[in-house]
Amino acid sequence: MPKREFGFICGQFSVGMSANGFVLPGSDNGFFRKSLIPEAEQSDLTGDYTLVVHHSGEVVCETPVQVGWARHRSQSEPFLGIKTDDPKALRLLLGVYAGKHVELQFTPRE
Image (cartoon, rainbow, N blue to C red; front, side):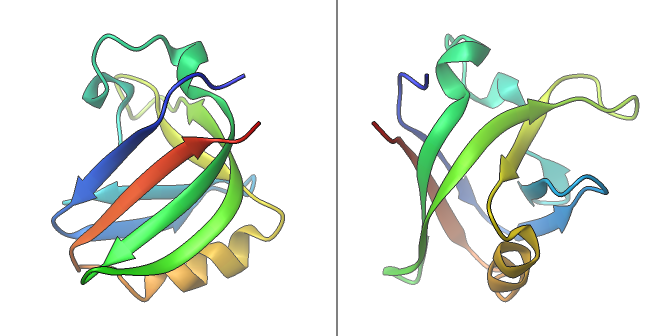
């Protein structure tokens, strides 16, 4: 069960999707690595969250998600992966903001 809120400020937002349906947000051509949230156990940052995305002072997305930490041989450490009921729709919605400044906020759901 997630135990803490966290988020990211993205100077140049990017978003992709893995072959197994994880939405993979990032910034400045990189994934959000676990090390960007120091002093937090990975288990405290995994589980059911509400994702809120802000752009230009407006909330542009608010949706329930499951947060996990993926691994890939091309990456030296775990990185953020998001599961949702409709990953293609979330990826398309967030893709509108690619290259723009956005803020992602993850709040634990009870």
